[in-house]
Image 1 (cartoon, one colour):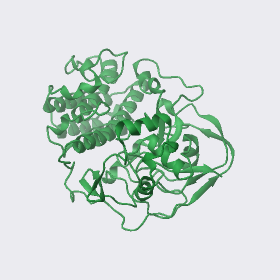
Image 2: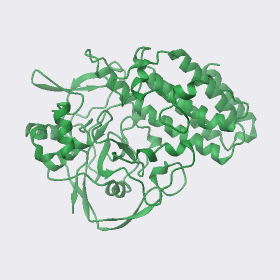
Image 3: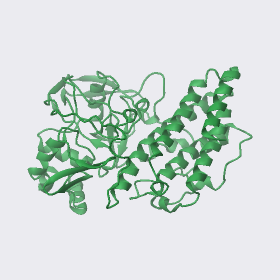
Image 4: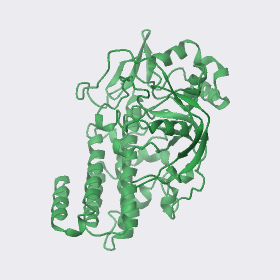
Length: 436
């Protein structure tokens, strides 16, 4: 069945079957998310779908298959008695890190999976989607609906990864090819300088942190608990490329006093001297974007920097990175709006507002000074899905706020992203903080 055929089936069943009325919004959300993944991949050629420039990234074809595997493995296999797997071998082939599910190929070798073909992966998606449509037009237990909601949010995470992994893969090509042709989407570059940086103060006190209420949240966002914070100040906007260039010009990458020991080793071993994707040509700085190499825009947020780089910049600036709880408390006063995936920019944009706190959501994930650890009273979910977050609570740092590649419906003020401190291929930037 074609994609249009699947949608037609959905609409027919949603209108004819009274059992699906309460779940029709979830069903529509499911198909919208599934279609978005394909739309993100639309500019890619068959060869582009197989790019894996480093072990941390995955080919787009693998992302399309793995997100399908999630629904097949955790939903259909458990809640649809008549379901038969599309290909039993896919259970291990597209497993990511779920040890309770079984064996899986080495992550660094996902690029060698030339078979199944891209066409077969698309057929696999349609096969699973047809089954999911049928499942969602019938009454389901709360546990099944919770897993479907988790799968939807899981696919949204992979949508961002498709963008960032493909960007890294294309950049690794000496030709620096673009993901899309410049002009296919009008990127809203501001022409004026970013607003002056100001500070917003928050009082000392006992605050509640973590997710609370209805709606979806990942298990690592709770339980809600109390945290004590000293008085602090948060910068009104993100650090810009121009400001980061000043750090570089002042010898930021050659001053070991600004760096953690491990960060200094990372700089030396990887020969870092600028953010990822910056290139200097004929004395001018250029920045690789989804539209290829573009002149560096000084007013845009600094992006593709590691935690080590963000922390070193903050030290150089006489400030620090905020804790994740300081960031969360500050974000409560801000609308959940910004430059997200839906804008189509796929690139951080300059701050254009004089509000006390701008760019808290979207543009770039903001590094915090907080290690990724469990909240007090945290318990992972039972079974294999319990491996989703808890097994990574070691040697990672927390980021907040989402990026220009994050779906807006996917983000919350309590959302905790996490990456190793040396990572920088994601849309990662920083906001300064200090004591009041």
